[in-house]
Each structure stands twice: as structure tokens, then as C-alpha cells.
Image: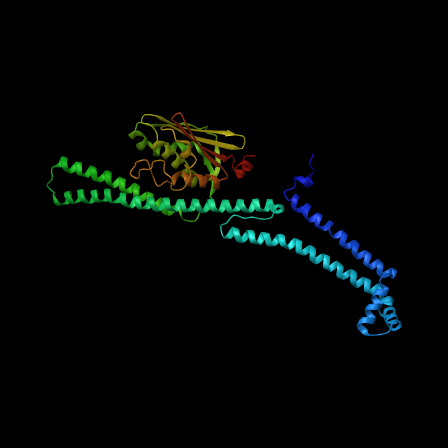
Length: 382
């Protein structure tokens, strides 16, 4: 069984440093031999001869100098020599350690330059983590560029689409203005067309507003207790005109005793976006089921509709900013591609999650929110 030593991510680095320190032992042993030789006098004659050679003195004078300046101060000389040796070994050890910091510094330079990081084998864990950061930053930059591109294309498409209903509104209003004695049936027809074009224009302007509002800084949550059942009933009533147009219905299965703590305005926006999405992509004459249940410490709220099955490759991107299921810009169902992205951000802000499933012509969005009750109310009740 491998020990923790070998299981460590930096095991190679630790072992290399350990062996480098072990290699210092022969150097320390040689130092000991030199000091021992000096103490035993084996190199005394060599020192005397060196004094003779450099100072041009006789043997006896060199011996006296050796005994007075070296032999009598051997302890101090050995201490100085040991201190210098320790400093030398310490400097060598620091050099070994510093080269790893230099590698990390070069790795950070490569990270800033957007390049792959390559370190020595013993620094593999650090190399792996730095490359993960590199890939994460690269991915985020690519997603940001893609999102910006989608937004620019969407703004261009919306600007183009606004011209059509606006031109129609101006044209029909001009006809009504220029021909006040127009027959009533024709006048009514023109007014109806103008109204429809005005509604379409309102939708497009709202999409522009949605894009602008999405870029504003996120505000803090204003938490309060929410009656989920009552909120959903109100919402279903608001969607009645849209539902009635395609003969769709909303079936609510929400217990009346479920209460949530959250920002009611923001959560209402989440549920509105999900319900709007379900209405937009439902087959005519089908039922949209909205259910809620409590599981442990979570409230699960699901929105299920019957419509075209969403392909897996699109399902993974459905919460991306400015992503629309319908690629055609003129589609009635395709909005700004922000509804689900905004819903996800609000849910995450509440500490929850949002997921989507689609199979057999059934699509279901599930919002999981922390199940919390109002602590102040509980204390009052007790």
C-alpha cells in the first residue's frame, strides 16, 4: 500500500529536494575530513611550506608564524570555516529552491500570454493547475466573444425587424389620415392591421429593453415570504389571453401551504420567463403542467409542456445568453434569447439550481430553491 508520501501531488518534488539534501552529506563528510586533518596536524607541514613560499622566510620562522597565528587560533579558524561552509550550503540550497519559483514565474508569464505552461516533471501538479486556469480563462473569453457576437447580431436583426412593422404602421395611418371618408369596413381593416403591427413593434422594443437591462449591474435581493400557490395563480390569469389564442391551458398542482423566502419580484420574473417559454413552444390545444413539491430542504417547481423535443446539443446551451432555439430572426417564438439566461442567474442568486429535460415531445424545466420559512414568523407563532 502506498503511503501518503507517494500519494501526495508534489511527491516528485519532495523526493527530489530530499535527495538533493542527501547529496550534501558527502560534502559535509569531506569538510569533516579537512577539519580533522588540520586538528591532527597532517596538513601542518603543507601550511608551513606555503608560509615559507609566500613570505620568503626560513623554516623555523614559518613554524613560529604557523604556531602563533594558526595553531594557537585553530578553534576560531575552524569556526569561521564551518560558518562559511554552512553559508555556502545554505546558498546552494536556496538556489535549488529558487529555480522552482523561477519556473512558476515563467509559467505565470505564459499564462498571461495565453500560452500552454510547461514546468519540470516534479512540478507537474502546479503545471496541471495552471493549465486548467489557462483553459478556463480561454473558455470564458471565447464564451464572452460568442455572447457579444450573438448580441450584436440580435441587435442588428431586431433593428431590421423594427423597420417592417413601423413602415406598415406609418403607411396605414397615412392612408387613414389622407382618406377620412374611407368606407367603415376598410377603415376597420386598416386599424386592425395597424394595431397588430403596433403590438409586434412593442414586442421588438421590449426585446431591446431586455438586452439593455441585462447589462445593468445586478441588484441585491429583497427577501420576503412568498405564497407560491397564489403567485402562480396570478401568473396563470395574466397569461390567459396568450393561452386562449392557441387553446392552451395551465394546470397548477401546487400545495397551498408552500411558502418561500426570496425576492418576489425576481422570482416572479423567473416563473414568467419559464411560463412564457412553455406557452411559446407548446403544441396548440395542449396543457402546460406547473407542479411544486417539497423534498428535504428544497422546493422543486416544474414547468412541463408538450411540444417539439429539444435536441441534446441545444439543450446544453439553452441557458446561454442571447441563445434562441429558433435560428430564424423573424420567428414569433424567438425572443432576445435572454429569458432563460436571466432566470438562471436569479435562481443561482437565491442559492438554487435550474435544469431542463426534453424527450418524447415533452419538455420540462425544474427550478430547485432552498426551502426556508420566515424565522421571525416562526418565533411569533411560538
